[in-house]
Length: 139
Image (cartoon, rainbow, N blue to C red; front, side):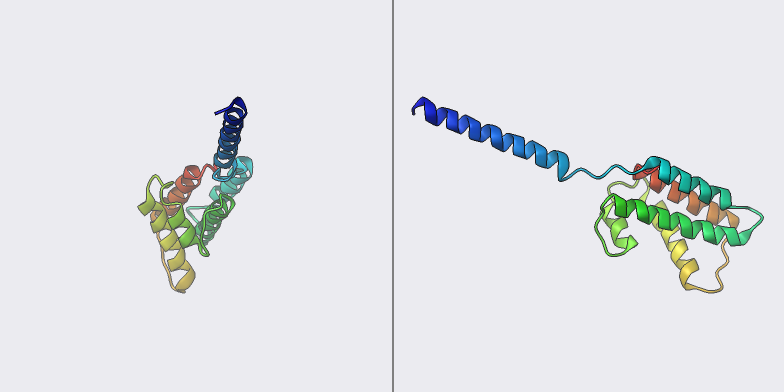
């Protein structure tokens, strides 16, 4: 083999390596979330939650659920629904049962008119949403 062929092969390998590295760096990377924005929104949810105001429990759970879904969408997890996006993110959850339980509570509140949840259940659901946001790198 002459030196031209060797140089050609080395350059081709180098180009393929650079393209491969760029692909791994950009195509698979999940976008960075705006932590300041998510923390601000999370603090607003926590501040709206009042032990003496049961109506605030439902609102806080709805808003926390929406915020986790927003983080999932901005992180580009696939799925048409939040449940599908949560499944796509299954490897991220430090406690998958905890976040799924919170989401089920939210669905229970959303789809049934006479739902009574306790303060402790609401507090645990919010703790699950907070951990989910931490798991996603949003807060």
